[in-house]
Image (cartoon, rainbow, N blue to C red; front, side):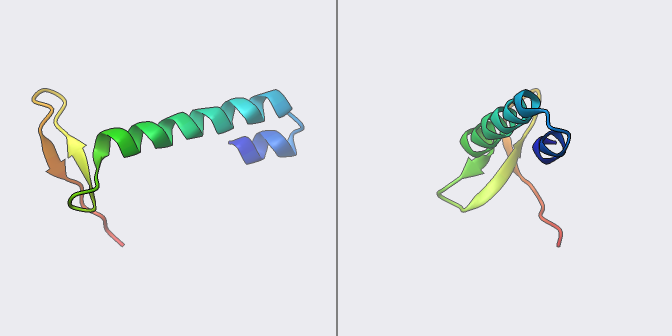
Length: 57
């Protein structure tokens, strides 16, 4: 979205999208990444327990 905003000349929108992406990245890494196992985990919405997130390539 930031790239599209840049193409359209929307500098303020570009900055907002870049900031949102940075915040999202931080939240995902802080809440879903486990450095001990080297995997991302999903969280159950109710119990908050972790479950391994499958990565399909």
